[in-house]
Length: 308
Image 1 (cartoon, helix red, strand yellow):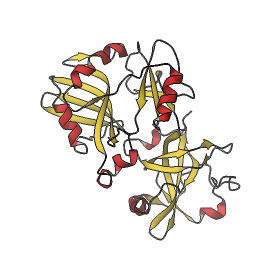
Image 2: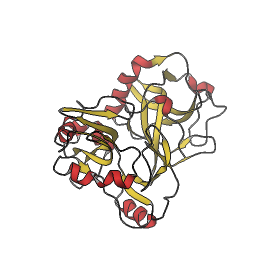
Image 3: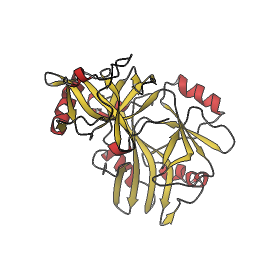
Image 4: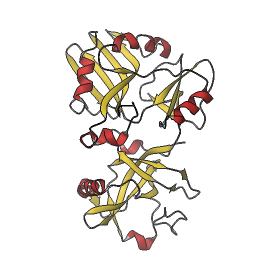
């Protein structure tokens, strides 16, 4: 179940608020001695996060399905998406999993039960296992936005207490509010500088067309530039995948790609999804002040559309 992006948090007695964690969404499955962690695009992540898998195995129940988020946190509990992707380079961060929903318990399907009822069992279920409980935040919507903003966290998710779980749906019963603008984009090409990436060319889908959004250079460390070059090489192609390139002119913020600049680019099949932070969308439909955040191997390219 996915949340709908909103520009203001809903307020009222029926809404429950949680921190929007900057990590990988997982469905944790325990069936007797068998444990699996499945990503949003149904990849097996069990071996990737063995500590989380061991925590699921310790649940004091025969079978359960839990919805949650794998996050890398520092000693203060602050999440970092970069540390999650490159954990060996961030030894001060710990991999944890926050549980926020219970979908199945010992043969009982809970999908049609209200959220409040599903969550009521979670605290006792995860206690002592090593899984963490995503807490419900107290206060009004305005108070929570102010508090989460002071902590420098990514955002907040509001959920209707009486809502059912809707698998595969982007539901209005769950709403996400971001304190900074971020979303996933599909890589359709890059500008090389030797054997490193100087800039990524990214976009998102509108129907069946991949539409160009930005040239992304900020946030790319020397290690990332070399790693992305090697990763994108097998996907290179002679054909530009963006339906709206070349641009008639370079956009004011450098977001466009003119016909002359097209010759500088190396095109790739739209297979790699990355997360990008930015200030706003321009009138031309491009990103202003974009910065690379990380790779999203848990997202399908065809699912990447402009949010908001």
